[in-house]
Image (cartoon, rainbow, N blue to C red; front, side, top):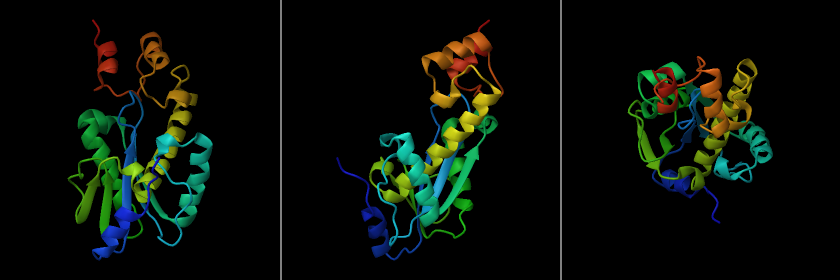
Length: 205
């Protein structure tokens, strides 16, 4: 199994770019909660060991990498709210979160590596979209890990305030127990009303 490496970043450095940030988001699929993005500038001389697509790592491994990434890299995390998801659409909201994450970095990157096949419209300057980037680029995989842990923690906190939906384990994704709870307990302020399963429960009459 191939692991992400620094080759995409190195190719950009060979073209003259110095400050390269990986950008990824998490939380497009859930029925509840924000969409969260992270932007990470790695130090090529101090890349944490074991970076990979966050979905391929255990929760414990992700947690140790969270500390390693924050110790060795420049990190910015940002969100788009449920209201923004419902106002725009999930794709645009995820791009807003990415734009905010890039804007929050302490240094302005020369070049961005964006996970996926689209570059958010609000990003100025040099950028490239990298399909399955979290499995190819260590900068993007670092961003995916940071975004996932941050969003999971938000959903764990919300689960304390709104028990019964299982957000501490499903992170707001449409698991069977979550959908059952939606029908039995109703819609919370943190549910995305533009998403079909939520919309259908609100307007089932």
